[in-house]
Length: 258
Image (cartoon, rainbow, N blue to C red; front, side, top):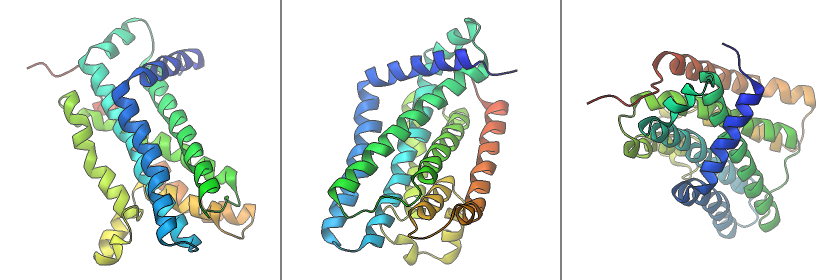
């Protein structure tokens, strides 16, 4: 089964319209993304003024957390809602391909998350001492790749969600794990055994942070950046494969019958 660019764009536009008309999604995904993404680093900048490394770590740690909200959690909520309301079933009946339907949802949320990341980053560049990344393209690529992978994993995760109202609650542990692993809650890893940090470093959000740090590094070359980003890129690639395989095998288009 191939992917139709036209159908992918149609589903993506449809998903975006529904998202921006959904007050619950706007008050959770968008408001939390902007509120935490800007507010927490801004607060930490006032507390630790002049410490650029501290501010950068805080920014990237919080970014990993809010990306989970805007991608993994949001797509899990969106797809389970449309599954339980039989919207997905009706979309399939129109002749749209399965990959086009799910791909359109992923493209929509990945694009929105990237746009929100740009807004957060520009706001912090203007309001704090956070430096502009040396390699903005690499930074952007890390965010886009991370958003797509998290959306893939969130799509696969819906197979475990029995009802719509449980989707956000069941996704919450991943939010906390991503925050701890990326130091979004502060240096909690220093209080935990070393093996915990090693395991959390395997999360896709950790790979996003690692690539972003390369983009923010004060010195480097194009070839050096590519070499340094190879391991995090492999991490994201492995998670992407897991998400695709799990979705193909276990994704449910209809709610379980009681």
